[in-house]
Length: 81
Image 1: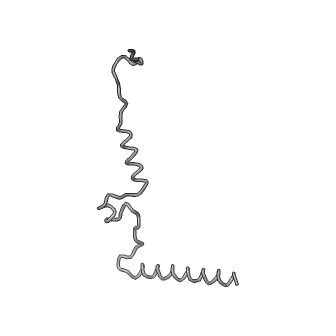
Image 2: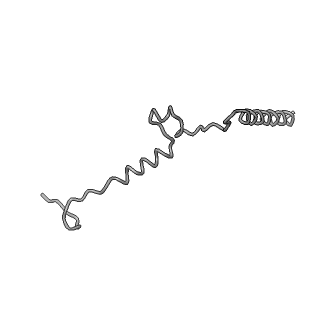
Image 3: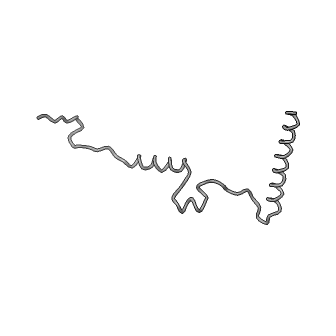
């Protein structure tokens, strides 16, 4: 019984792939759709990008931050009352 269900599933998946390939070949400029978040126009309008892009932007922001120098000749300065 399990083997029959497995074979039926494999056949159905194969038929779906063949139909997808045929639809792509029949279209004039047929190609697989680009479903990446960064290339979606609606997501770009809303300012949403993929996690990798957001991480790169956050890394650039942290690089811009420079340490605060309080003056002096590099020695640590202490305050006393």
